Image (cartoon, rainbow over the protein chains, first blue to last red):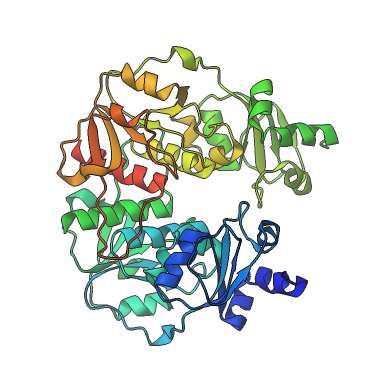
Length: 245
Length: 245
């Protein structure tokens, strides 16, 4: 049995304020929940139906499919919902990296885009994403679901992005309309790739800090798609960096 | 004023059955509506608020923001909603292409993914997408919105995909777990790139028809993202074909 108050408390975790107050976030489905458990993220409660085969012993709370539906953020809940503790992390002390390939997000707003970008980073072996303070919150349930478990493998920090980049000695890459064809550039193994906001691209504070301007060329003559979705552009850019490696 | 019956008829267009019966589909926002109009797609009615600056004279129906909200499929409606006529097209007579680069979708289910793939095709100058009969419907409002207007530039056909591919003389590319590193393959300028279902990949009927098996390499050691979203994989694959051109 889940009490009404329990349902209410879980539903409140859709809001950043409540996630922060309680230090908790929600993850759903066997794949995402098991990836988080494997990565050592501490569960507060795991609500699972009888059919759920996850080897969770502690804090497991058996629920009916109907109860799962009531606490889920998905249209089609999948066997298990985990309430996890947000890992402790002091973002204010994060120092700019001195090696490796990293992503920086300048006000990416859509949770689905952020989650997909985390999944892409995981695929391409990028361990760290630095987000501007206005980027969507990584612990938002929609972000967690879109990562498909990759949130367990990629570190996400929130920083004052312009200040952070000013103190960074690595090459700073950004895709801009006046950039150079990405396929004709030397791409370093170490660097930071900046991706901008869905509507406005990279902000005017961050733009002057880019040391290497890139352009993903468009292959349509005449009428054309005017832009690529930010997650799509991230994928193409990361793939090209890794191809060079 | 919009009547209750009008609202009901528009809302029914969320369902494929009703779109087919009425030969109509819904598109929202100035960008998408204007791209469709520019491409010559015929509007049945254009509902627009006073602030909407689109130069639409015929069939324009002025509405309040409140009325727009009531007929919209979006959380945040944007000035204009167009009810358009589905262009006539006889998919059963479509012949396999003999040149050019094309996409084929084998049961892509998520409307957002289909729409994003259409937008990617547009960016990379791919004019035609052949969909299996179980692929999401292109005229679904969620697909139309995700294309951001690119649906006006890319032809989408629904065909018996295995049969269609059997009759196709072009190289048939597909990304598979046992494929060859895409960055080490010769990619032809003419061919069909198959992308599979979100959960199951390329179907067992279509798999044997692939002439060139590709793999998008994964760059994470140890724990890893097990897959890429199908739209992301489409983008990386199309980018690589176009880079070779």
